[in-house]
Length: 110
Image (spheres, rainbow, N blue to C red):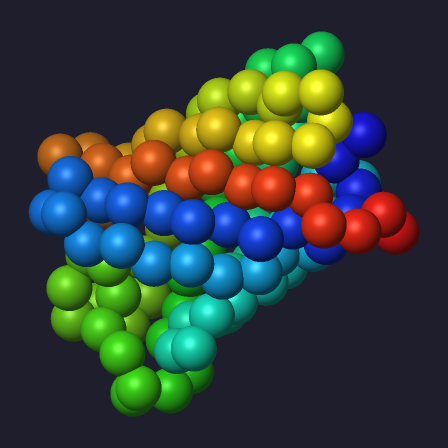
């Protein structure tokens, strides 16, 4: 149900926005954007999903949506809608007061 190529948009409680691309295969999440790559997992039961994604800077082009961080871990939970949309909420593992919302749209099957 999750397997595919997804575009994602995200916003933090700091008011900063970003977007990227992820590939979901099984529980594995791999992706990235202009300056960061993502590596983690999402697992689910029915429409509900949860997981953790590590975000690591590979280029100095942009700062993260949480500021000048080189690496951080996101703890996420949410739901899948009709297998085509993902809505997640979460926070930084290192600082739960730093919140994020993520929406995703499936673009291609694998």
